[in-house]
Image (cartoon, rainbow, N blue to C red; front, side):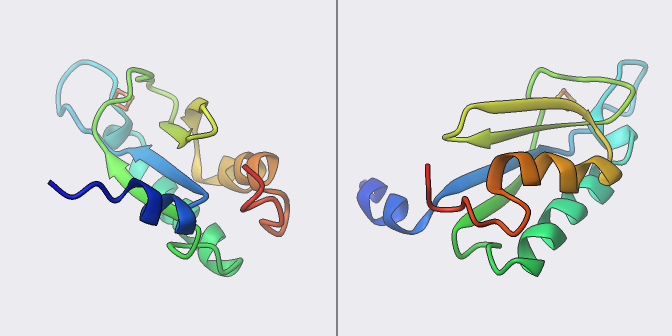
Length: 109
Ligand code: FES
């Protein structure tokens, strides 16, 4: 085992987890309501501000327990922010509220 906590936290400000789980069944799941497009919008927003993977990681994940028929679930850690019903159009407002319009608050947490 290699404990890389210190090394990783020196580089990383936050990790955005976007649920892309698709149950392909009768129950609501993010993957059935545009999660791939929402994840792409998150990555694009960060990339446009030079924050993608340099300081903010993005991972597509399975169920976050916030399933909805109206959009995607997202959590931003370690800031302890949790969202549901996120559409691609919501992404700029969401990320601006956490990181600032130009991602100027990246590194402040
Ligand atoms: S399927 Fe996305 S939060 Fe449950």
